Image 1 (cartoon, rainbow, N blue to C red):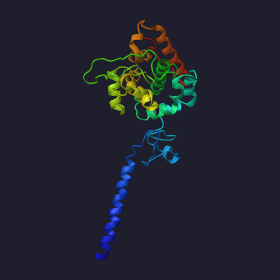
Image 2: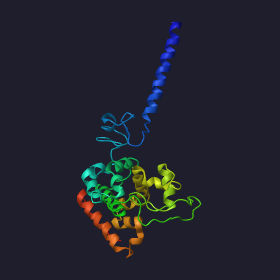
Image 3: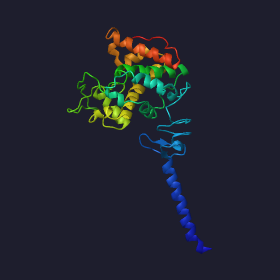
Length: 275
């Protein structure tokens, strides 16, 4: 029987190696635009992006990807349909830089990193959060026309934690027009890009652009929705200077977009609309 021991040892080694490979594969960590299957493997075909897909551009029936959490009110991807998204971006001129930059797929890819979006409240809260997000995005970007704000400035505030690069400017970029070094710095740390030394990344990578919007939203706006503070509170979080007569036309535009999107999604806009 001793003659079989070397063979047994080899077989055991192969089995162990197979288990190790399986564990590594099941950790996934797929790149941008690649699905993580229910078994933990990376790919772009239906077995990876279909039923059970964990993360990435999942196409349907998944519990962990394909458009974020359901919040009890249906998946975000079911609300933000092609028709809904295109209904916004189609209003931008064909000459707009954002026309070939922003896309529904980029929105959904970025959303996979923020599963708490649209969760924590009632079904109506979920729908109102989606409507509020796109209301502000529509206003900030001019129906997805602008990647960068028009009136550019340095937007540097003295900071030891997030010091400005003197060769860079921290003007608004992306769907929410993230601004100032004290936002670019921590957003970059959270997402994985150099926000202080390469703020222009937000204007060159659409998924990172949407991720900065979600980063800001989840840190400054999300809790206002689920606590029932109303749309007015979200305006204060995005641009409080518009409130109290600071820029009434801008406030009215945001409220108009919000009520329109609430109607499209099928929810009442609630109280406390205007600041």
